[in-house]
Image (cartoon, rainbow over all chains, first blue to last red):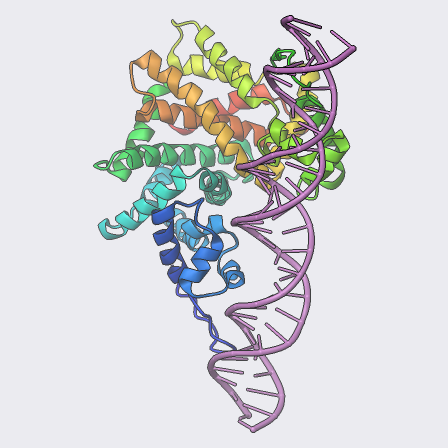
Amino acid sequence: MTPRPRPALGRPGATTHEQIEEAAFRLFDERGFADTTVEAIAEAVGVGRRTLFRYFESKNDIPWGRFTDSLEHFRAILADTPPDLPLHESVHRAVLRFNDFGPEAAAQHRRRMGLILSTPALQAHSVLRYAQWRAVIAEHVAARLGLDPGDLLPVTVGHVSLALALSAYEFWLAHDDADLLELIDSAMTGLRDHLR
Amino acid sequence: MTPRPRPALGRPGATTHEQIEEAAFRLFDERGFADTTVEAIAEAVGVGRRTLFRYFESKNDIPWGRFTDSLEHFRAILADTPPDLPLHESVHRAVLRFNDFGPEAAAQHRRRMGLILSTPALQAHSVLRYAQWRAVIAEHVAARLGLDPGDLLPVTVGHVSLALALSAYEFWLAHDDADLLELIDSAMTGLRDHLR
DNA sequence: CACATTAATGACACTCAGGGCCAAAAGTCG
DNA sequence: CGACTTTTGGCCCTGAGTGTCATTAATGTG
């Protein structure tokens, strides 16, 4: 996301996150995630195996790209929310905005999420990312209600928001013609109807 | 859960799932999950490392014990549900019954879940277990509504049920005096209030 | 009792992820 | 050029997980 300006001191990096991501996705497409070794990715990038682990903490982190950066974005979206809106509505809209990629970025996003949600190892790893995402919501809810982020309601809203998003994603990835934002919306209204 | 009667043919097993679980939990308590090698567990049990991997697919699977067996139990609970109850109520009650361990088993259950939810590697791995659990709910919801288990609503109900349960578990584990079932209930009513 | 049958054990060897360590490389600045 | 800074990448180690296979320990049959 952020180009992250490095001080022009010392030896320049041999590659970038984007380059690694690209090479990795190409190999994942060809041989599948499990059958692609980190060594193969490093070789494709033209860099040492050891170096690759300085760009990404683990092989599982590669498909997520710079997710941590996008959490800041999410935090900003939530903060930007009009305070007169009901809390549930403001959280819901924030989730929608967060998942609103343009039509161009949508293809790459679909590829990324398709890989993650169809690969057990990546699905497992993603929880750690989801936890950070949920924490952003919990903090916001807690702040607006004057509660602790660890209290039951903020935590619950975080979990449920994720639940709705994941439900939408799963359906979206299974149906080429589906619209992600509409699905998140449908999941929400579906839940409300279900609960009465 | 089930004693699973083995044909009394061939060489008898050198250990049991329960024995391994016991030894493993003792070591996890002493040194922590990450610092306990599979080899150490095998040695504690008095069995070869290779053999241990025939009882549990991975180190991560050990804390879960015989979870797959308990899924059958969950399926039975859901099937047992009175059909005149509103669907959301019947799912909710099933979740409660599933998590109703007696006062004796509660201690061991807390230990198990405490380990899982406080260890990143186990948290990650648990998604795969949760997915099976969610599928049981989705199937039930789909059957009652005449939908496909992959449709949006069944999937959503599965995800949201898990969301509520996990919220309750997190709070439960952080507060010694809390009651798990009450918390699941509170999470549910909290969500309903939140959504209006 | 000897012997086939069955099924589990455990040793060995291998792959791969991940991380500690450190000398060498490749820039910038004075 | 020489001092300084930062990244690289090679080496080597640990530990999880898997394939293979000879060995072991049980049962059942003649």
